[in-house]
Image 1 (cartoon, helix red, strand yellow):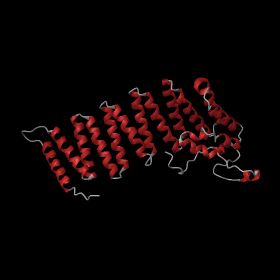
Image 2: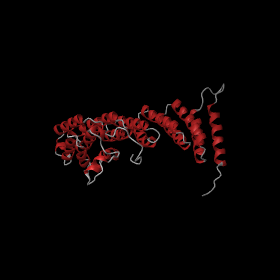
Image 3: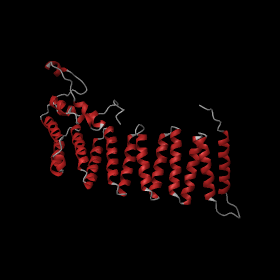
Image 4: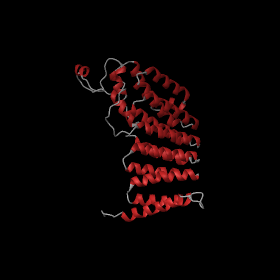
Length: 318
């Protein structure tokens, strides 16, 4: 790999900055700063700093450039500058600050009427911060979803709400996940996308079972059968009902057997990871089966099968 000497680029950047500063100065004969010329010089300087891998200088100047563009009344270009500042901040490994700058860019896109650009930005950034804080990912997905709804892009909105729900379930916040999935159901109902509703209804049922509320899970199932003919006629409907019956009977072995149906093992990884907590080890020795203790073995009631506390295993399932 070539050992490039970026000194020339750095010097070029510094010259552009000096020129930009001159355009911002006022005098007796020059009452107003020349924003256009200053912006042009600072933009060129940012490019030079970026090429020279001077990320801190590029970040600081990008923020200043964005402020000038806001002053000029060009929110789209100001948003672009904040995006650049965020990217440079990521290079500096300051992720909390990068979140702030990306969010500011999204706000400026929205204020300027560029909701599509804002939604794309939030959706693209959401997965980048899930390891830092999944609440940030959820917030970005929700902002993108609401913008998509404003643009009447309901299919995109449903997809984004569902992505937010998958982040929420990974945090163990089943209440928020259930609310988001209800929102997905409502959006899909407006589109008559009953094929996707079937799967979302299953997730809502599973959440109630995870939360030790088999009565509420049964109510969701019965309501879906009455409301959505596609669900009542769905080939997986019987497997779901059999699983509910196992919970009604408080039969841990039956729960273990029925949740291992191929369909349940092929849904969203986050839900599969939780379902696996219900699976009990198999053995031909009844006494051994009763005394075997594992993380998925259940105590004396169905409440013991619910995986309320999430651990850090299977972090690759994102």
